[in-house]
Amino acid sequence: MDKKHTERTAFITHCGLYEFLRLPFGLAGAPHTFQKVMEEMRQQLSRSFLVYLDDVILGSQTENEHLEDLKAFLNVMCEVGMKLRAEKCRWRCSEIRYLGFLISEKGVRMDDSDLKPILKLKKPENLAELRSLIGVFSYFIF
Image (cartoon, rainbow, N blue to C red):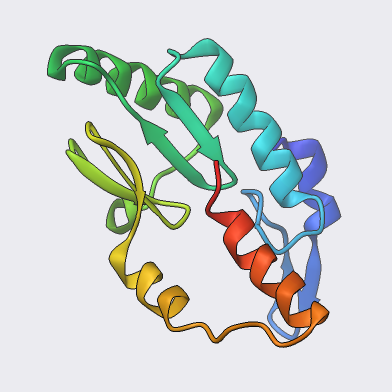
């Protein structure tokens, strides 16, 4: 976070005055600001960089290309002062779960654990239930 904005995050406790040094996601505009920064980063990087809020994917055609993309991504992260949480990172995966879908070289599909509850849904008995069911299904259409 730019130093000129840290005072806007200040709060006082019995222990003193505190200011955030990094953008906390609890602020109303934080997700939008973060998404904007990530989109700017994406433009600097390769076509294989996808971002949705704080979920990022680097997908490459070859392992060498992936290592180059990863190096470029990490360099840009350092340049803008962003940090990654190691426990949330997955490296060099052949299949990942992203926004409720499984993505691999074979394509994109629903995770079986998400499919089971959908198969157990009861038949809609009125218009409201039908609309609700259509809403569930529309999430999985792309």
